[in-house]
Image (tube, rainbow, N blue to C red; front, side, top):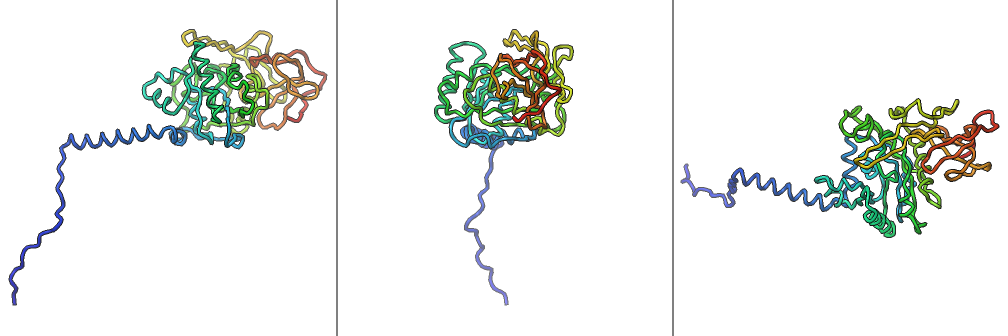
Length: 364
């Protein structure tokens, strides 16, 4: 028995057919990209550090020492050596707090990068101009007065020799009357030789060595008062000894070191100081002194030298006393068997030999 055909079924909800012209698709994609970029820029002040660490981790492996030395709250001034254009990124990727930093004013003139630097709250520092420099110092003071975190490079310029240059006294002006600020030294190691350092006599225009580079970030304990440029540099060099001790294969000494210039090699501690040629770049302007007559040069990377009195108390610049050295993988300072002094720029002068029969280890 057959039944007559029923009425045709008509779907209540028929799928809509959407037809977009190619230019409409492109416009939609472009609009989405613009929205994403706008959201990224708006969120930069809050996501800058994790974003930087993510990007940096593609090329660099970080080994961080002493992060516990950074206070979790309150004003902090971080003072660092300066080896490459990426030093600020290395610090930003590894500090446990949101903060800001002083940046060369030239960076703010770069397309895109300058805008991003301003959006992240970085502070522009001009090479010259007393008025502009005073304004930068006042901005730094306000950051600290508000309980913020500030990182600076007291050398005020990238090293052209791989050695730590003298620290400028601008940090003393920033800290004037601010004893409550915790001043933390940090040393960046294994950065000389990277593409963004001046190794080989140039920035950027050289091939990177290896697929990944290990960068050591060594935070030292807070510097006790009074904090001077000289004391800060000494503390950074000590953090450098800790950093160098963490490397399984220490990097080679900077190729800028001139073995014909004054230096000091200790029979048991090894090479301690060295000298380089002066570096002068009139267009920057830049003048880095690599040697001084009558001195044995600067401490090598990964070496710290200090002057102490007869009781072992560290002395300030241009004060004669016993010379002690701290080298990697040794927990104690060692007398090197000479008396001498260190000038405000960090150059070491030997005065005379002591009566000791060799280096004697003393407690740091």
